[in-house]
Image (cartoon, rainbow, N blue to C red; front, side, top):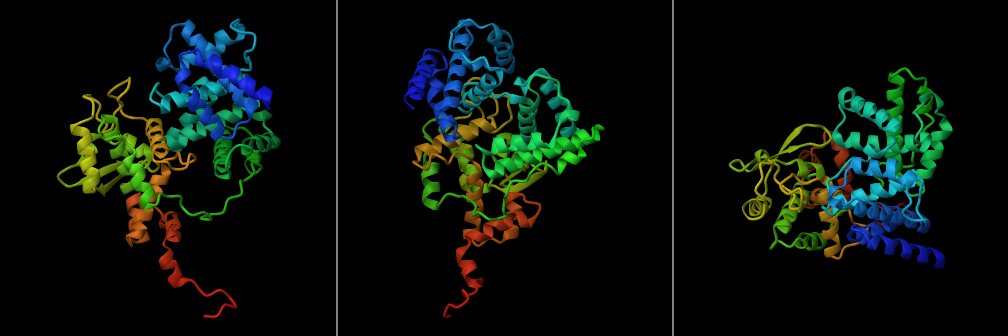
Length: 421
């Protein structure tokens, strides 16, 4: 334990001497929140410090982080590096650490986002590009679905083939079982289920190409999950009030964040739907907002509550940077004037949770969508009405919120057997 602590301190000391020093705290929190072991954290921090030193030597700012820059470091510098004796030369480990760095820099608004598919090996990238084209043109999958399919299939291909060409005929059932077992050690069952789904979609794609892998589809284990077993996680009224007070509305970014949070808490919008909202989507005369549904690719029209409209107007009149970009919510850091990304909204929500003194594990934005639905239940809205607001095609998807209506459940609950009535 003492040696790990000393090694971590040395790695952090190296990182703090680079231009990436400002991200050290966020990186440590990210690694620890995700349950990484001490040895893995040390390797990641050391790899990021090495990358930071290389950035400084090449006089490149962290705000200029790009796929090409990371590939240049991995393919050209790392194999021939003479920077320091104690560096990690495992390309897979270094790449994983830099993916975490890119995520942190993006969420904190330091650098623009880039897809981690761009830093796979060249063989894996080619395979993922073709798979992505299939998802888009043949299956008509949404961008969100394509993103997680690319990510998890990329992890699998990199784990199975490394830098070698992708060879579907070499895949075995044991490969999928071992990979999912490895991922399940630091993922929740829901995430493992999503990974398994992505792998099945990939195998069906290979079948369409003529590869004899259909027998492998049923060999992928299913994560144990029980439909509607859990209550939807939401904020209480007092917690919601604290959360919405967190943004500093005396500043332009605070007014922007407050308006975005209200849209999620009052209208139940997803983070992607807030990011994609444009000035033309709001009809001020009719008092409506047109939402581009992320999953179904439909346009859904909702009434615009006065409180939400007032917050958006406050941002538009006194906060939004001048820009030709038509997105409602814009970046306030370089590149200024571009539409906000999903990562930026999630980062703002995470900081608001912390500022409000809520649990450190509360970092997601979907909790705000659940909060909107629960408020509608508490206001005696019907399940059909809630489904209409949330844009659910099937009412069964919305049925989970019936479990939070405790008073209504008491009316239909039968007495416990043997209990006096």
